[in-house]
Amino acid sequence: MPDQHSTLRAQRRAETQRTIQAHAVRLFTERGYDATTVTDVAEAARVSPMTVYRHFPTKEDLVLVDQHGRLVAEQIAASSATQPLVRRIGSALIDAAATLTRGGHGDDLAAGEQFLLARLRLMILTPALRAKHLDNHYALQQAIVDALGADTTDPDTAFHAQAAVGACLAAMHTALVRWAETDGQTELPDLIAKALTAAFGDDVVDTGPDA
Amino acid sequence: MPDQHSTLRAQRRAETQRTIQAHAVRLFTERGYDATTVTDVAEAARVSPMTVYRHFPTKEDLVLVDQHGRLVAEQIAASSATQPLVRRIGSALIDAAATLTRGGHGDDLAAGEQFLLARLRLMILTPALRAKHLDNHYALQQAIVDALGADTTDPDTAFHAQAAVGACLAAMHTALVRWAETDGQTELPDLIAKALTAAFGDDVVDTGPDA
DNA sequence: ACCGGAGTGGTAGTAACTACCAAGTCGGTA
DNA sequence: TACCGACTTGGTAGTTACTACCACTCCGGT
Image (cartoon, rainbow over all chains, first blue to last red):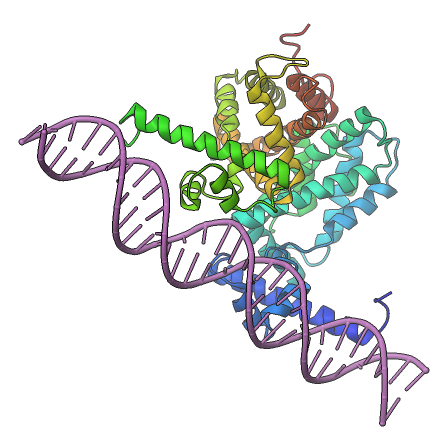
């Protein structure tokens, strides 16, 4: 059990990790991802290149790390299994987005949200990051299918779930892109709901908080 | 106009290109993608590593090159704009798949189809290839949206199209994965239709050739 | 005071690429 | 037939992401 061993160690570790990532995203945004070397990031964060690789397995992970997936999977597992698949997944995605962007809205976005936007812009504009980000979505798809609790031994049921989840995630991704394009002005949950409606029709999105 | 200049030159070029790719896919399948260097591929194809890079910009492109996208975009542009979006896209995807896999079915698959399967397996199992493949799908999404001929100046219309196309492509991808898993035993167009139905419901897939 | 383990740094090496330049080869022309 | 331009290929050297392997330092508990 290497965790919980010491709060001070964990704090320092998380601290340097945040520092490195913050400098990385800043440099990538300023100079461009490809034009910035890992050594540049290390120097900006006042650590050695080695340390960067200790905290982030690849250069791409300097931008891509997040636990959005875990959040969604939890929402899914906690949702009622009686609703149709797409509706169930859609609700979970919207709720997770609401949790993620909860905070100041309008003109005064929280610092965390600004950081999220900066990362998202990098993911969308940089080919290497975009590719790996989409692959992360693919991994998230598998996680959601598992969280659905469907009978994965039956190939047909699994196939059905895979298709539904993949389509929902694609719609969400469209919403994410648009959110980044509009600099987070529109509320992300609403955008996701709109994207789901565009893809699946009016009857899919439940009118939860706003109706 | 550097093409059409000489058929002999073009033939030789296409020939070496095919040779390199064939050896690459073979070696990747035998030894694994990461365990095979570009130099290995070059030696197997009896060319220099330089030549490999001349024909394929990146190592990943040794597996990923195809013109499936062009095919789909043509199908889309030729489809009637009166039908609902998802139905229109779905039909195009199914038709394109039918064109792509046309040939011997059942136990005797055409050599080209075996090659396609081998490439698909690599794309699904190798993280680096999977990521870039998904990014190609993202590019295809943009191409399809353009081919739809919708009013891209209106952000809402464009957003609607993006979401619908993305969801359809995700469903198709699920079908592709399943097709590869079952070694191409099931007919690809049928699988895609099934995936679309799973995601969008019964009323989306038109009963064209089989009903 | 002391030891184990976590975090960090250095060195050297692999492999994917990218200029930059040199050589051979094919296509049409004087 | 001799020749020139364009295409294709090969070689060299360099950059960069990433990976062992080993050594040092500092925190946390005995």
